[in-house]
Image 1 (cartoon, rainbow, N blue to C red):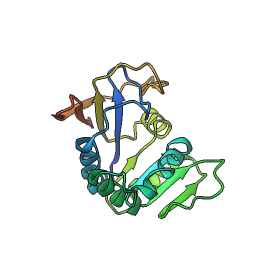
Image 2 (image 1 turned 180 degrees about the vertical axis):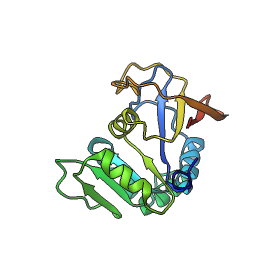
Image 3 (image 1 turned 60 degrees about the horizontal axis):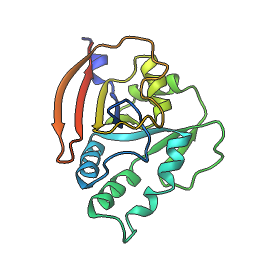
Image 4 (image 1 turned 30 degrees about the vertical axis):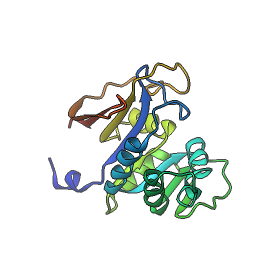
Length: 190
């Protein structure tokens, strides 16, 4: 492996997915253990990438969750870290955002991610299905965290729709939550 490749930031993808491969944000076992897991994930990244739909969904809740009296301590901790991180939304239609540390990017996703990976910093988290699928088609996801919920829902977007290329992965770790949710951690084989 050359030294340049070893110093590149990784593109990380972590997603809640049902056993049948769907990624609907309204379906899943959302508890403190899940929020604590995703809070720890944020320690390893310093940039979050979103498509419009996921960005707007997140923007509608997380900026206010830390001060919401209905939020659990786990949600407040996640919100604190999540809100502090820089965020880029790739969109042709969003005109402005009020969410702190957020900016809109209209350029080519693949070209921009290739540039971002060469910049110094921690890893980059791709947080939308549309972003994930485009980066996966170009073999740019380096690390996968599939958080598999023991549910069959046939609702939402299917995680691997439109993915026709084969990408070899290595399973490096698994974790089972009390709820039955299983985390599968994979690295892309080089």
